[in-house]
Image 1 (cartoon, rainbow, N blue to C red):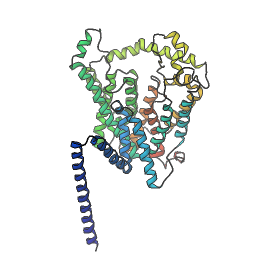
Image 2 (cartoon, rainbow, N blue to C red; image 1 turned 90 degrees about the vertical axis):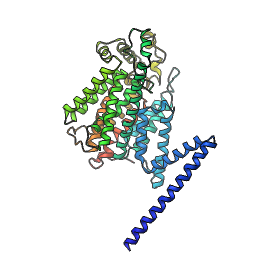
Image 3 (cartoon, rainbow, N blue to C red; image 1 turned 120 degrees about the vertical axis):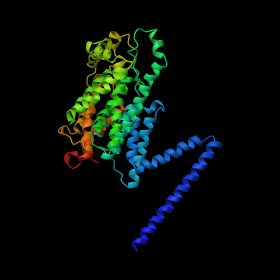
Image 4 (cartoon, rainbow, N blue to C red; image 1 turned 135 degrees about the vertical axis):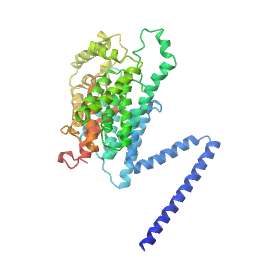
Length: 461
């Protein structure tokens, strides 16, 4: 009887597979003929792909986490404007459908979401009392709230955590190749030679591929480089390690090519943090040194000159120092509630002391921007969110087990969080969504991966 049932089960599976295969073949043939004779086939293909992808992501949310990680770091929105925001909305729909199908109507939220939501609301409310026209979009505050809520639900287990950073590693490889390709094309096409006839120095040229700004690219990279670094040095599957190695090496090389000084220092922070937990320190130092030497030898940019300018204090560093000083002077005009969103770009001290700078020039320091625009209230809310991100990680374990994915990801998140915290001091990023996604991931890491270790790690629902 058991043998008959087994045979029947095998036969049923084969019959179902044949039907599915036949159906797919017919669908492929119909789509092919539609492509030949119907002008709206592209829209149909997009709809079919979205439907199939949506069904797959409902069944396997780790795919959705990987796609989000890839989208954030690859800046695919440069080719498809608005695609990142659309992807976040798609994530919300998929997660809602999963809840409805499971018959569960709660949402995975915690104290970090409460603080992030309070900051997002305050960010938008501060537009009301801004004296000057504000170029910042009020949707930024809404995006902060939605990002924290969506990521809190999406990264609900260790598989999704790992999937997010695997997708990010693939995005790092993609974005890095785009940047390296732009440098290669710049010099092989003769643009460098032609430019050298008009300017004295070409070595200061910066390359950042499809990204719109090298500094923004670098500070986005550092939110992933810590985890890719730790994945490379882990005992995970060899395919993940090779992907992580490629992402880490290319990411470091691209930041060097971008000549982002904040990015260079962030890389050093990540390297030192990972060196502290690595058992084979000499091997890691040798590998990183090899990457740096190769980039320095073959790079068309003057990396040493950029570093020397940072240490000696060039014009850019002096301007940033003046921006910070003027910003703190403007802070005292409205210290509690701030002068309103976007006010730092329109205040008198900037116009008087740095009149040659373009209109709506920001301070390149998140703390100063928050202090002037949102006051002490905004600073406290942002600081509390950052505190919860730090509190969500394990800072006591430094002798990690490289075969344990939890230890590996935690070590990488520590390096990325320290580097990101430094990045915020070099660029204005109070409402930068990739940072808020990363903060959410850090804040909920201990809750998700060590739920039984601490009663305080339970997530309120």
